[in-house]
Length: 237
Image (tube, rainbow, N blue to C red; front, side, top):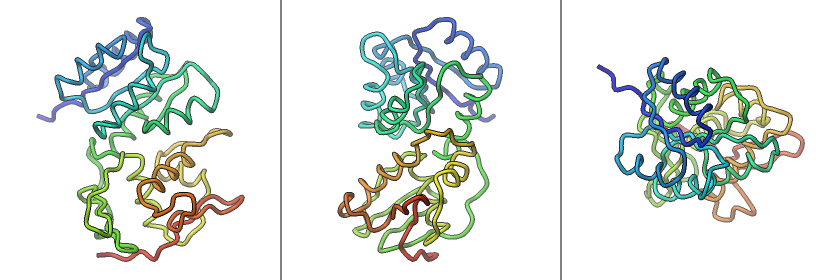
């Protein structure tokens, strides 16, 4: 039998927690709940969590801080929940390392779709075998089959699921200008909002990990009024 996906939901609003947990369990997802960061730490310490859903507004340590701690010690996929509509809250969450976000109020079906999409990107859910062989560019090696990125020095570079998905899209479409809307659709399978900055944040994170000088990027080029272009020549290994 396949082990069900195990999600940690950190939400201090009992009504929302009960509603979301009931819906996810009805869709064959195991759910553990916590109302604050200390409880969440205990659940995480027990192991077996595949994805964390964190409300930003928590008593005590907030969800952003908890996300930052999680990202410092693991690549556990994270979805942020926020009641705030300001774009800055979503940007901060993504900068902390979150893989996706959802603004309250939300439809539980949309959350379920986001969970499945994030898990597919992170390798936590079955998906179709990637097309082609490992890809190489400027000494780097990206292997979709084992979801691994190796630097020119041979060191493994840790990527979140969202970062890996975006880099793979760039490598499959080198030297092409891709708009933010195209990149969101290709990596996340959803339509962007008018103030969606998630791609900008992910590109920034990739630059920090891969560029010699992130302030003067050579791999990930910004195209004014166009989007981004991955500049290296990419070949199959």
